[in-house]
Image 1 (tube, rainbow, N blue to C red):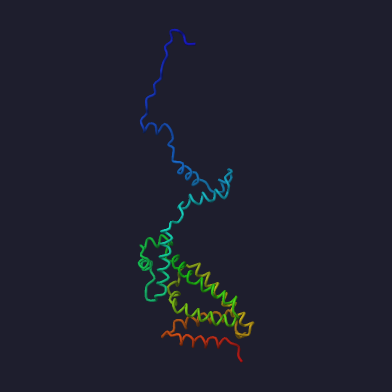
Image 2: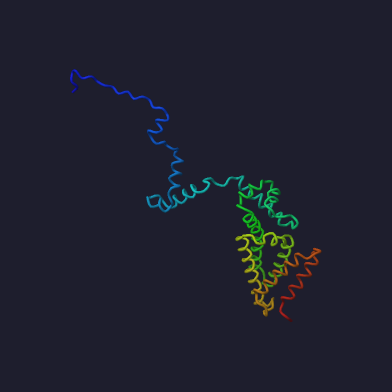
Length: 251
């Protein structure tokens, strides 16, 4: 009980200024910023250790460490424009294949092209591998659907036609780091070697030559035929006939 003579005292709190309040209590960040800060400071392994599902953690960690946004439609469009431009320039031997020329043909800025692919090597790797992938698949299809000797002849004709249009590709990509293209070239060499091996077993190709040697010879000869001038269908057919006759077993 309060004594009769005691006086009550009321404490009045003065409102603090904004700067004082900021010092008095920690600032509260927006929820999405707090979550991102939390994620950025921890690895997926550490987060999974506190009971968060691994798949959720890895997805969230990936978003926090990358751009955090899906690739936009305009970015995909820019990528395709740059690829189409690079592919077109690969068929034009006299045009220097620079990032600036590719960007100009695509109607984009050079910085946009570099930002999209990370550099010229990656752009050309994507463009050339896009060109080569259907060629490799065509070789596989012919090998699966046609007699080996016939498949080899048909494919060589199509390969020469492809190389005639894109025979400057090897000059443009000399010395560049192109892992996807290198992998496809390896695939193509293996499929062609298998064609030769099967044709040998089928009696359509002579057996006194190693399949790997024959494949290398065929590839270089096909490129030489593709580059021959003047270009004419009759001349290509004549060269191809000589090449195939040289591969046939002696009578």
